[in-house]
Length: 445
Ligand code: ZN
Image (tube, rainbow, N blue to C red; front, side, top):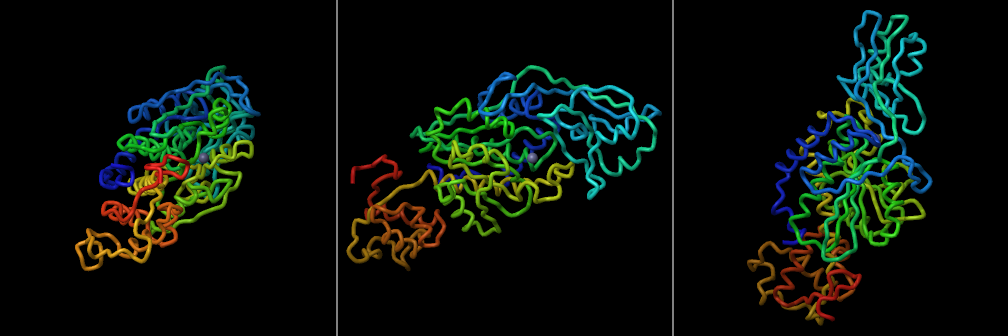
C-alpha cells in the first residue's frame, strides 16, 4: 500500500493519544540548545524511531556562528530571609533563564529585580526566557510572586555549568526508492513548553514512525535540532549534500486547537507549497497561508539566500500569536490529542500528494470514452468513484498534467482524483507514463 492509503491504517484517535502521551513524557525535561535535557529528549525519541545522535564540539565554527559551551543545570532557587525557597527550579524549569551562569550569593531586592522576568499581563504565568549568547543569569516568576517579595535581601542560587562540551542533535534517514530527499525538522531546545516545541517533536516523530510502514518514492531525512544554532550546524556540516533536498517542512506549534497555518517557502510556488495549500483547501477546516518571512523557526536558516531550500513551515497558531506562547500556560492542558492527530493527518495528506506525482495518458482521447460499458458511468455500481473526477482525469491526462494539477484544476480533493485515476488505469483507459516529472519513466511513453 502506498502512502495515499495511510488513512486505512492510521486511526487518528489512537495516534493522537499516543502522541499526547509522548508530549507528557517529554514535558518535565529541562531542554536548552545544548545539554543533557536534549540528550534525554533524543533518547525518548529513540524509543519510537532509530535516530542517530550527533555531538558537535563546543567552539567549532559553523557558518557565521560558533557552537557554544554546553549548559547543564542541577537546581536553582531564591530564598527569603526566613530560609524559605520562594522560587524553586524543582517546581518548574521555566523559573531559570536558560543558559544562566552559575551564581550563589545574597543580594538586595533592588539588585535581584534586575535579574527577574515576569509577564504582568498574565499575573499567574511564568514567562520563558533564555540568554544563550550573552553571559547572564536570571529567574522567571509570576507577576504575583514578584509582588510578594518584600524582604530587603534574598539568597539566590543557580547550580548550573557552562563548559566546553557538545551541541547534540538527532537525525533519522529513511530511504525511499529515489535518493531525492524530503527534509522534515523540529526544534528540541525549549524546556517545559508543550505546544511550542513538544507538539512539533511528537508530530515529526510519528510522521517518521508511520512512513516506515509504506514503500516510499522519496527518501526522508528527519532532524531534531536546537533552533538556529542546530540548523546552522547541520547546514554547515551537510552543505555538499543539500542539492538532494527537493522538499521540506519545519513543523512547530501543532498541538493547540487553533486553525492551521502554513508559511510558504522563500521561493513560494514550490511543490511543497502547492501540496500543502491543496490539502488545506480541502481539509474542511479554517487555515491561513502566509508568505515567507525571515523570522520564525529554522525555515529562516533553510531558506537563507545562500541555501534557498524549498522548506515551508507547518503550524497551527503561529509563534507569538497565542498568549500562552513562551509561558508556563503553554502546558499539557493547552495541547490536545485530537489537535496533534489532525496536524499529523494534514502533514501525511500533503506528503502523500508529493509521493504520488504520476502522469497518465488517456488511451481514448478522441471524444469521451464510453464509461458505461466499463462499469464506470453514473447509475452503475462504480465503487464510489466520482463521475466529475473521472471526466477531469480523462480530459487532463494528456501526459502533461500531474494528479495534483488535475485536482487543482477540478477543484476536487487529491484522494478523489487519485481514486478515479486508479479506476481508469485498471480498465485500461489510462496508461501511466511516469511517477515523477523528474524522470522515472514507467514504460517509455
Ligand atoms: Zn519558541
